[in-house]
Length: 329
Image (cartoon, rainbow, N blue to C red; front, side, top):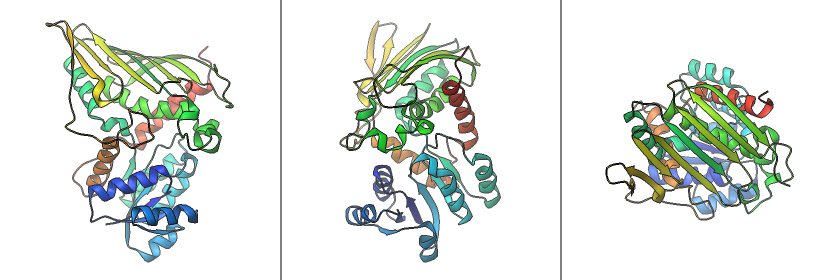
């Protein structure tokens, strides 16, 4: 299967490495307008590259596309790929530009339109969901996710990639990463309240801290802190109810369940092994990125269906828009 990867930055190259590891029969064609990036990808990944989607589709019988460019470019690229008769996998969009048109086009072309939601593929999240479903009474959770914005990409200024843009800012990306799995685990959201502020001297034109209270349809409740000012990269989660207490600090080593009869916390081991990429925070492991690619290609082959969708993401984005734009008066 010939597959194009549009965007040969850090994420596009990650996707290429994982696809080569997953299925050597998939032939990758990298797409990037930047010649230096193309040459680097050719040398380091052993793939062929082109400078446009059109050229790649003319030279190769392509079946699928992975879109790993900056979020605001996704809508038009998705549209172009669908019109070239390609199944589409895209990274987080963060905005819903072109959603209705592309959803309709994918349905008409009978193509998979797949949206990344990496944390839904974490084994720890699957475990937390299983524990939540076992509990018949309402559950509460507290969750802090934060990392100092200049530390996200230490090799470049935060002003030079999408998190510096107000429409695709860092807090917005964290919400778009976390909200889908929280809704999947704890249920649809009935109501939510929030406070927000700018507490740092970062050169950004958006709030850097959000505290959000969720009330789910089934009675579950959660308090979520999202920020881009925490000097320690942090994911700290607690789920608790009358018969359950689970904690997770975002890494495979930090998932614990409290044994009520023994009155002690026990480590939950879900991985025989896992892989990390040097230079990223400890809670970023490669396995979930790999697993969602498996889900994408299995969906193309009719063996599975996507865990997440553009339709669900539109609801999440609408909620994020309201949290960012309104003052919750």
